[in-house]
Image (cartoon, rainbow over all chains, first blue to last red; front, side, top):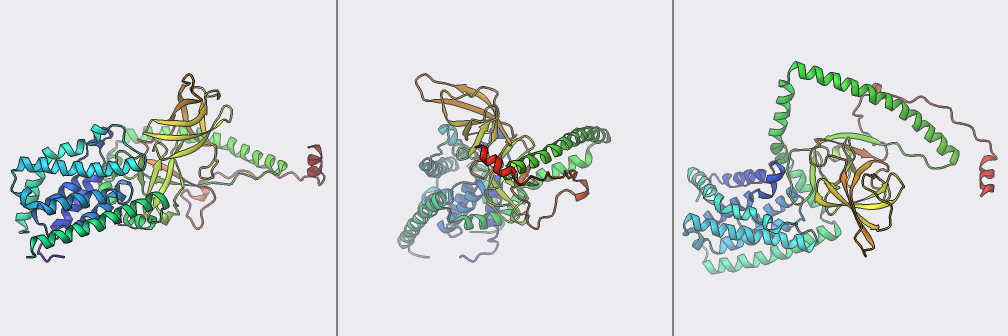
Length: 161
Length: 309
């Protein structure tokens, strides 16, 4: 593990993201809930590659699996894979303009959702409306710049690097 | 700083290990339920998070309770008093009927219905996966909740508990596609299996022959077959019967009685009295049924009954 003052900020933001994943929403809004946990996890993987390994991403995914009542390992697998991609190519993604980063994040989230969907299909419980299923990934394009700015300010304030 | 490529190779290896681990865990969870303990432990760890997420809803309820006007409380009180009176009147009748039932069953030498124990639980304001019909309740193994326990609301059967932590539990609703419930039609006792379709206002009856006697408006009760749900609780009302030409099976849909997406308070049912459980309702408030003398059967009764067959 890394030694860093103020490292607690990273788990704290992840905890807040997990809570946002469970916050009650009106039924019509529930399919649109952004994947906050993956967005925050990807931010830390890109900003401080040592802060979040794929092992921790996998464990976070397990937490989400239990919190969401999905098959144990479904989100874990997806999150580990996209954090792996982020860690392999953070140097390229980091220098992209914010808007393009949003598109890359959308792609990564769509990969994760596809993995989760693939498992759902394998156990015979495909959602009825597939385009709607990908709505959270599309929303990430709009949300990423805001999440990025908030988390970057946090990172700078607590001098994490 | 490590050399970049060596780092990347280690990363890929770890990813491969994690992928294999994920596949193993998913298969075990889906097929054998061996990782139930892991799930329970994580659910237990999530309790503080559940608590925090539920806090705003709790606070709102508390505020509403404390800021409600005197008028509202008085009208509520009057309504509840009236409701209580009518329920008590019905309860008296029910007690008499229950006693009569026990006596008749004794005459028939049939097994008596077991007494059931209930506990009121509250749903936590916590969302789960939008494509799964599950809820979190605020009672767990500390209150004697067990996996597979039936869950009801005031209107009918809601679902069953699937995961239990110390202070919370996750329940699967009857509207989830992976939930099947043995039911029977009240009118004629026709048995069927009701399965969820992923919507709170709809369940489907499986394998109903096209010639079966099912009509729109029929009431479905839990049949108690399978031993998981108590028999004779209302489940749903048939809303749609379709008999496609040339098909052996009819398509039958029903609307659950329980308010699956609205109920906040739910009832947990035990098939037998809980061990060491503290009663929710003080004993003096529970109406006790008058004891009827059980009829003494003459010794020859059973033999004559057998002789007639």
